[in-house]
Length: 431
Image 1: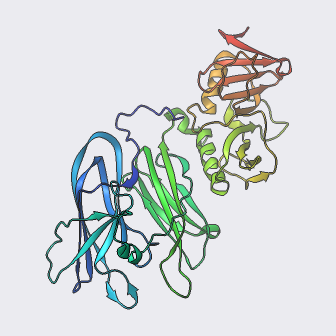
Image 2: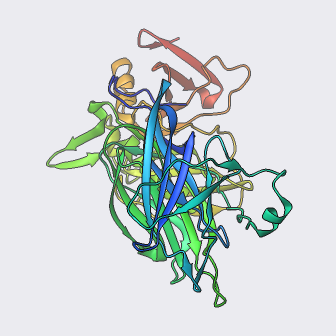
Image 3: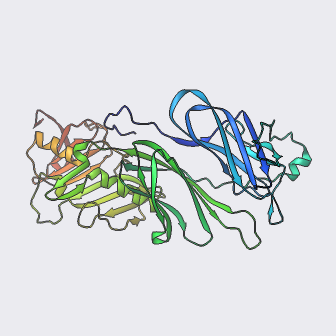
């Protein structure tokens, strides 16, 4: 489910990274400058940018590149392109054994690869288009024996990150730091800027900020250096992060409390979702419990006073992950894994549009009912229930009446008698 953002006709669609088609491919090598020049031209989907020849580090005994680019927003039609790229390399050396006569290029229309001859130059002449043939099972057997095969990259399932526009966020690699581990990060510089990179807590970590709203991707390729016998680096993982950059309604983006400033409820839940999924990638949001900081605290109509939080996540293998706040929103303890499933909830697709402040305002407009707790959850529906199937902000009041504010429809429903009866409100009165 996608969030309904503040309407902005300039909001870009997703920019995604993928293979680019090519009508012409060529390669030349200048031994004096030790420059391998790669050339591609053709027609691509509008709008494609950031085209690059990406080398396959796992291809043993030769040179293999994939022609990649960023596309988005998706627009009908195609447009022509030309791309030339220089690669500094020494082809003839006893320490670097590659085929000096050809390279292999993977494109969108040749996903198995195409052989491109290398034209050797003694001057600065640009490369000329050359006729290239796709790799196939009908290739000459002798060539097939001499042609190296590419290692299979361990592609990981993509991960979703929901981040607020113009707020920093982290991407943390799952591998522990060591002298042999290397990571290559690809991202769209039209959407994101990398602010920092380091190894806090012993893990490879990158700090990003967003430049505009929309959807984009970050690809992290993690490799390990070869053993003492040499060879090419070995790819450990290729992980794609689908980054969804959104804005909250202005009224709920920042809550000003006295002289201090406090991030919104949704911003904090989104941040903790990213934090938990860094350690538990399969975690999905079940519910958020918000309560008064102390049992003796007076009832309130201000949801920002509900500073004692617990977030519950569904996890893999019938386990549950929980995490609790310290003294305020934004300050969290470490997540805890519980080896048991959590029942009677439905996973809440994230993000949602309605903030707890808006839900409390809807409740206040219908009932002057102070509360001691609020839980965001999507309860399993009783077949006899009359309420819509949706997530709710459920407010608990002093007389133990529970008021349910629908996240999708903005209506208030009342639960009484120990939860045995659900009544829909009408005109501010319970039916």
